[in-house]
Image 1 (cartoon, rainbow, N blue to C red):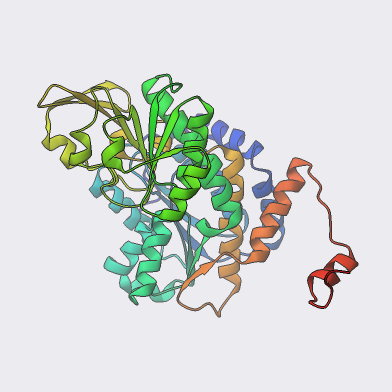
Image 2 (image 1 turned 90 degrees about the vertical axis):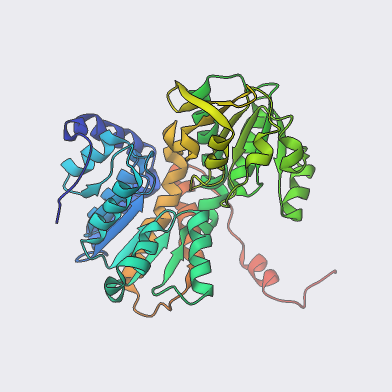
Length: 418
């Protein structure tokens, strides 16, 4: 088995600095690391992780190693790996297989490299690791105790596997923890997506018609941050309750077919396929910018874009100009992949602190349990609330506690109007 595969091992010194900086802003993980170092809850276990190889992920990996685990890590997106961080992890003895700019074959080869270490626990972001185990390496599944899933798209895939009977081991949906999606998905995606757009384009958002595909938690965050920068935010949705919420939040809501002709910037974050396609691109104004913050590069139909284009050229890093057959120019950021990770650095460390704290504690839960059923679990309430308590503690925030009288009132039905 290969020990590691990274772009350039000499980048390790800068990577160590990046990891150190992230760790300073991830106090919850540091508290968990201190306990893991004492208790070694993952001793003797091998964990395979398919995650964005960023400085924040590196902090999580170090927590898992402190808990006694052997970790094999591969990237969950071909453009999201921070090469200096990957080099630093390899320098620290982690079996890391990731570099920025992988092609599809290399991407899946790195997943195979991680799975060669025969993990008992999997940590996934998008379910490609789990999908590979279930489709190509089924003989290994009997040795897997369970796994976790980080993102909305992956949870959707895994619940589909559970529903049709394909899922072969238990998964904890970390994405669905309150301390994950209310903060990571909303505040993290909101800030990092805007960061990626600005780094790639350097355009002014104020006054622009900013179209957000979807209004789930990630899209809510994107819309909120764009609105705060003065953009005229338009939301497209298929779910009536979410559309109604967007209206009540003061946003314009309309079909993509209508938004296409007036939008200046388009961002998708739905977890579904072909949110923006040929029929929409044919209506877009000259100079319209398209990007995606959903996990896979399928939300913007790139084959459709290429089919209506005469040529393309790279205008700036992470920005391609497509010249259409009628002379209009459309701009695609980060090859339609996660713009917040491909064109920026991903979510801020402070929100990943909570998401990855859930990952670490759920890995510990799986390690200690022999009675999990083959299904997709929600994160236990006690873990979710523990993460919130630790975050508040780290921020120096105190909250009230219920009195005994209040607890009694909430647990009975006899006490009403007096």
